[in-house]
Image: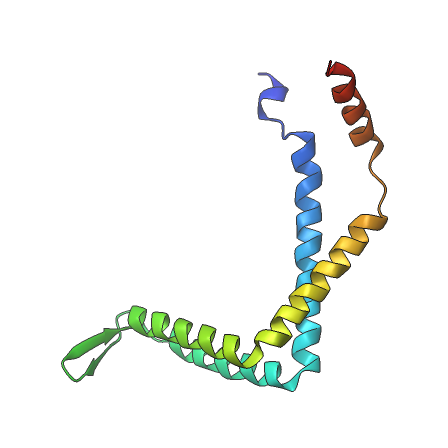
Length: 131
């Protein structure tokens, strides 16, 4: 049939690559921060080992702790909470500074780019339609 019924809108085709580029930028800033700040390197290393040890265990593992039977899902939730709290309390300033620097780089990059001519034409058409 009709090739237009399955086509992707033009604005979606331009938005996704930009979002991917910005995610790549944030990832690069995070990698640099992990290498530059030894505290982050230690946190990433320790929690990577802990997550590896937990995720490589069989899914049916159960540990008896007193009267409770703790499953792998409980361990995952517990490690997730501990991971989040430790990272938040020990490295929040560094993490927020990295996110802020990445956001600043993205905003500067976006500010120096020209508006595409197709977008200018579309905006001009929309303004011409308004009374």
